[in-house]
Image (cartoon, rainbow, N blue to C red; front, side):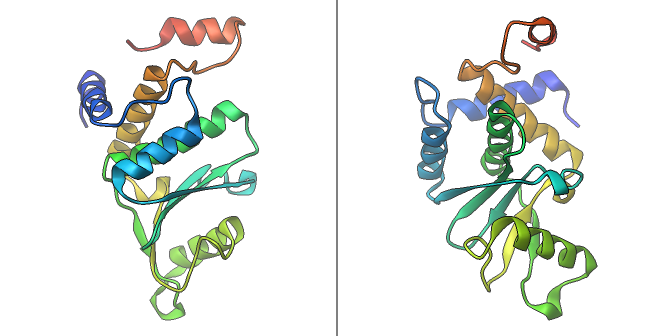
Length: 180
């Protein structure tokens, strides 16, 4: 696993290859810019995922015609934005997940569980009869998770966003330990 300073350099280099960040920051605009940059539409699918928090708070579903980011709406707006950035970072890093086949003959027990979770979270507008690729933390190794988290952080930092909103002791502690 690469050291954090090396990962930060790689993430900053990747950020430099992206279209400019929206000013002022606007998540929907950034998602649209990433979609145009990648040449694939991105659909945001906000859902209450608290029941699945042990599995994921966000998912990237790569369909044949578009990418779908399912993210948990039970947290703060700050947390929702972080989840979306993290899933976008997986896309921008070129990570791949595990195939999820929707026909009954090609599923194993794990995929059956994923299928049930995805059906509940995404609705018919996301899953179709073709195979999709499901990308959530169980489909990545820890190096990919760290790479995505680092890129999400670098984007967050470049956009001038605070990791914790407010000016209380938690905000000051986060600022004191933030890696520069």
